[in-house]
Image 1 (spheres, rainbow, N blue to C red):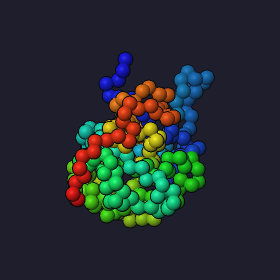
Image 2: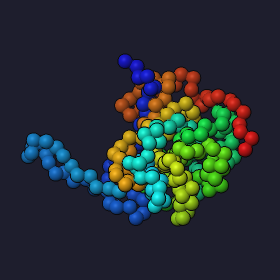
Image 3: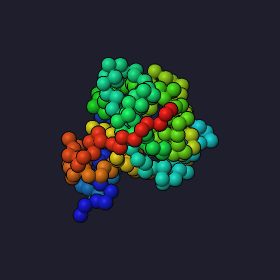
Image 4: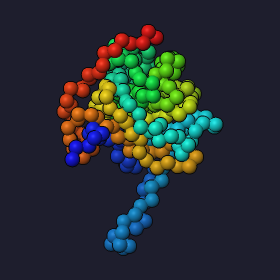
Amino acid sequence: MTSPFGRPISLSHVHDPATTPLFPGDPEFRVDTVATVATDGYYLRTVRHGEHTGTHWGAPIHFHADGLAADQLDLEDLLLPAVKLDVREPCAADRDYAITVDDVRRWEARHGRIASGSAIIAWTGWDALWGTPEFAGSQPGFAVETVRWLLRTGRLGHRGALGIDTFGPDLGADDSYAVSKLLYGAHRISLECLANLAELPATGAWVLVGGPLYRGGSGSPATIFAFVPGLERRGRFGLGSARRRGIDDQGDHDQCDSE
């Protein structure tokens, strides 16, 4: 049977203490076996990590004491239309590259205006560095001016998200987390440490955030799926080059907003 939602793609790395990079100051990620089939008749482990370990999402309370916690958001906040900005080239040349308004305008010149309430996902190329020392340290992110513009023009509205394949939407050099503090208002969320972004089209997909909802939580590790219309069935996790029916880098060519 063909799914009415399109082909699912996993945008999450496999959570593994051996390969998952930890943000400085985050708690240890460890897994302990507490029962085995041979001894207990079943297999069970305890998993210990922070709420923002591995591929994860963040809720407004992460940076605002009066913000919404994970369990206070609407289900609609976790299912969003997605757009992908391919900024790998400038990020490869500059690990501290800040994604600009012009980057977004160039995307819109080809694909049309970003709809309010979208998950705006930056593909920096950092997903290919997962599990290596190069993933940590300096990292690209969204410029503060770009996020202010996205908010002012309604591209990031009452709900929506910034997604990225690095530790988070802020530049690695910014320990004030200015972008995150702007993002986490109303019902807006972040999607961080994303994977397999080569499989995500520039437009046309929807993303669904799956994972536990902790009461009072600042987010949680997540299995984040993209549903891509017209994408033929691939392997178990949607890896490898995709065959798409007319959606690769094709979008409507509406005139961009004047701002």
